[in-house]
Length: 139
Image (cartoon, rainbow, N blue to C red):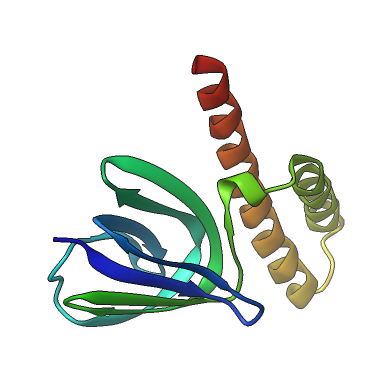
């Protein structure tokens, strides 16, 4: 018995579908959600969100936000979220280079925190692009 998942950002509804399982990056670590999960409200971390439906896994990148879990419904209000096939590899590489340059310069605490967050997102995006490319070659 699947549950309904909605992933929403300020700009769009990223996904609204019935799914079998999700694995989510939270501030307390990755957690798995199955149908009839106990109610939960948690803060999301930057990371990979895996969605499993009919035995097929789809990967998304989320960059923070909140998740509400109810027994038959999960709502994710993400700062940003993208499917792996929406990721632009060249942009992710450029973001990674720019963030690493800022971190190397030891700027203000605020700039360092923003650069660290950008670097984490870029590395996750590049990982998903790499996995997508590998999957494409194996088919």
